[in-house]
Every structure is written in C-alpha cells, then in structure tokens.
Image (tube, rainbow, N blue to C red; front, side, top):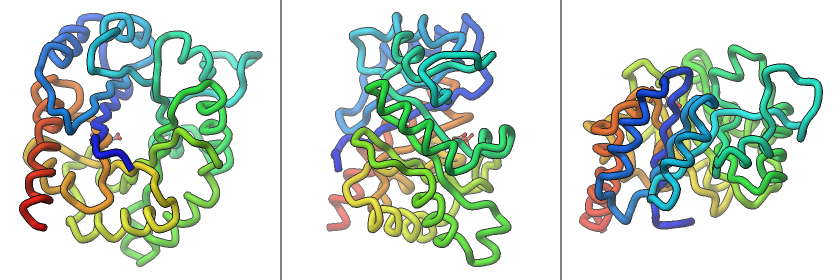
Amino acid sequence: MTDVQLIAGNWKMNGLNSAIAELDAMIAAPTSPAAGLLVCPPATLLAAFAERAKGSAVGIGAQDCHWEVSGAHTGDLSAEMLADAGATHIIVGHSERRADHGETDAIVRRKAEAVARAGLTAILCIGETLEQRDAGQTLEVIARQLEGSVPAIDRLVIAYEPVWAIGTGRTPTVEQVAEVHAAIAARMGGVQILYGGSVKPSNAAELLAVPHVGGALVGGASLKAADFLGIAAATALAGAQTAGAS
Ligand code: PEP
C-alpha cells in the first residue's frame, strides 16, 4: 500500500462555474507530501476543472459512470468519456447511488470493470446502514459487498463509508473504523482503503491515524478549500501520531 494518503472530495450535486475559485485555492495551497488530493466535481465541471488542474498536484475525478463504452443510455456517461474529459478516478457504488438509483453489487462491479477498461482508478464504496450495524451485521455486510462488487482489477481503491455517517455529522469510533478496515485489509491485501463519513478538519487526524486507513473520501467538507486543505494537512499529523505511537 502507498504511504501517500488519498484525500478525495466528492462534490455530489453541488457546484456551478463560480466554484472554480475553490479549486484554484486548492491548487495554490502548499500540500503535505503525505497527501494526494483528488476533487470529484459534478460532470458539468469536470473538463473545466481538469484543464485548470493540469500540471498541479490536484487530480480530478468523476462520481459515477455507465458500464458500457457508448450507446443508447440517455443521460449517462461512460468511463471512456470521463477519461476523455480529464478524469483519473471514478467513484462507483456510492451509497447515494445504491439507494437513489437501485444500484446492486452486480451493477457496481460492472461499473468498476468499466473504470479499469478506460485505464482509470475506481474508488469503490461499501458500507453498512445503521440498522445493519445495530443488528451486529456490519462485517457480514462488508464481506458480502466486497464479494459481490469488487472485480479483479489493478487500479482499485476501496472506500469504507458507513451509510449512517454520511452527511450526518456522526462518525464511528476509531475502534469501529479500525475493526472494519482491518477486515477489509484482510480480504483485499494491499488495496488502499479510504474512510468516508463526516470527515472534517477537527476529526481527520484521528481517523487518518487508524491502521489500514489510507485516506479519506470527503463530501460536505470538500466543497470549501479551507476545510478540504485542513483535512489534507491532517495526513502529516496522522503520520506523526502513528510514528509517535510506535
Ligand atoms: C460522501 O458522500 O462520500 C461523504 C463521505 O459525505 P460527508 O463527508 O458529507 O459525510
């Protein structure tokens, strides 16, 4: 696994052309060598953001793709189109897509295969609902999602995002994060694993210091450069904490 933690921002359905000012601030800021920054804006901004970020330390990704290369799929975008627009990564299987668009593990798997086919890196999201956690089914759900949605591809990042922590301000304890990340690492050996769910500058250092946490997938706090950079700065702190603990 790489030592560089990936701090990926998922802008969801947020951002107009004027938001390029936030990207500019992210590009201009000195970032820790311990952090790789990725911004996944809505598809309408992808090409402009990629053009702006060219040659900088900030990568640009997409939030979803169709599994086919082209064809009669009104409103959809293929991984190849997103690569052509400048994306280096594509998020697949986000819980909002699983819930809002009925995406099953089988569909997520096909999408991740499409990302690899286009030569990009898939950020594949998994995570349990609160009901599943309360029923003691978290590790079982995670295992089922990994089994059903992860294809054998090289360029893969897994994002563990407990559904109940997304956009709620609630985060799992570090012990809960450690348990799930260790379980994923045990099954997926060597794959970079992000934590996602209400990450902000104030909690990033402790979450990023958890063993097997290789970065963060950030929603709300990625929209403002100051917050996103605050999270990225915590990668160095996380490293220092880990080093201090050993
Ligand atoms: C997400 O949508 O992937 C996410 C983690 O959102 P938030 O950081 O807002 O909880």
